[in-house]
Image (cartoon, rainbow, N blue to C red; front, side, top):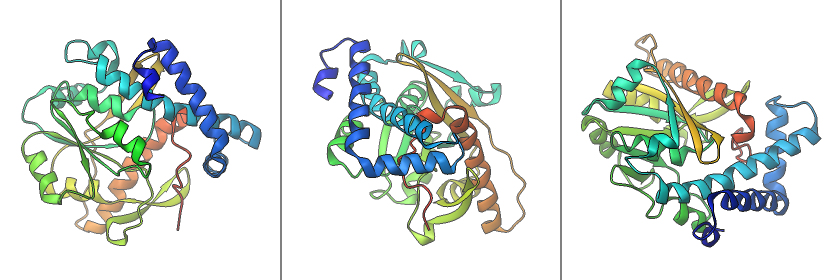
Length: 280
């Protein structure tokens, strides 16, 4: 598919991505089943046939993400990024983004195209994305290998120490993390509810916010057209500290999770339902 992207017009490329998504939906029955079960359990739709249709659109959304990210690497620049991405945010958030030297922590989820969102914001100030490498080395290489930019850096969560992350924030840069994946590591996780179901998620965002006292945002980029996206940014997030660090981390992380759920409910066909989010 990636060879095709380099030679076809954008509209054809995205059509091919949709076709590949439909094919992947058919040849990965285990992932298909996970997606359908998750959509039903989240009560997005109330019957299996509709859940299967939505699951297929979600697979297409992910293969589109891959195609769009490759296209964005070639097409989106500092001069034209606003033609592709619209930012919906409060004046306080825009001031934070546009003021040099003001760093922030950004919590996000697997909705729409998170890769394009990071690239767009990096046109304003440096963005560092902490990510979990994909299990498929081919997709991992294509999504993250060499697709950074002057102010966009992908950092594997397994290759850097927390001190690097704190230095990034102290330097006034953006630090972005996904918080909607299952976490196995006992010391790094806490329990929250997502779509009314308990799940494990990272505690890293809350702990960094409480330690560094840097502004905290929630950002999700949804697809609105052909290579068109709207980045919804909420924040800076406010919450009342109790002095109980564990309780504060759990409450804050639940608040962040609630914000991501709102966007996922509004755009369920762009959410990554094929991930085993709810595990013991």
